[in-house]
Length: 121
Image (cartoon, rainbow, N blue to C red; front, side):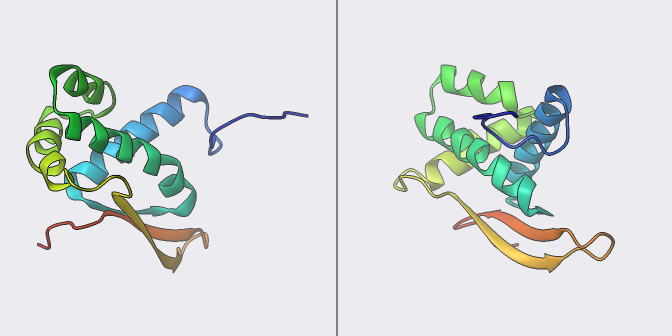
C-alpha cells in the first residue's frame, strides 16, 4: 500500500507528467487563461505561481530557472517583461480556478485556470 506519495500522478509516468505540466504552464503564461480539467489545473497551479515568483525576482538566474520549465523563449520574455512587473505588489495568489461544469464527452469536471488581473482582449 503506497503511503506518503506527494503530488498528483494523473495516470501518467513521470516523463509524460513532466511534459504535460511544462505544456500547461507554458500555455497559461502565454494565453493567461486555459480550459482544462480540475485535476490538471490544481496540479499545475503551483508551478505557474512559481514561474511568476521567478519573474518578480527578475535576475538572470531566475530567468534560467524559468527556462527550465517554460518551453518558449517568447513566453519567458512576456513573463519577465509584463507579468513580473504586473504582480510586483502582490504576494501570491496569481491564479484563479473557475468551475465550468462537466465535459460533454466523458463528464470530466472542466475549469478555467486563469491569471488574476489579466488584461481583457
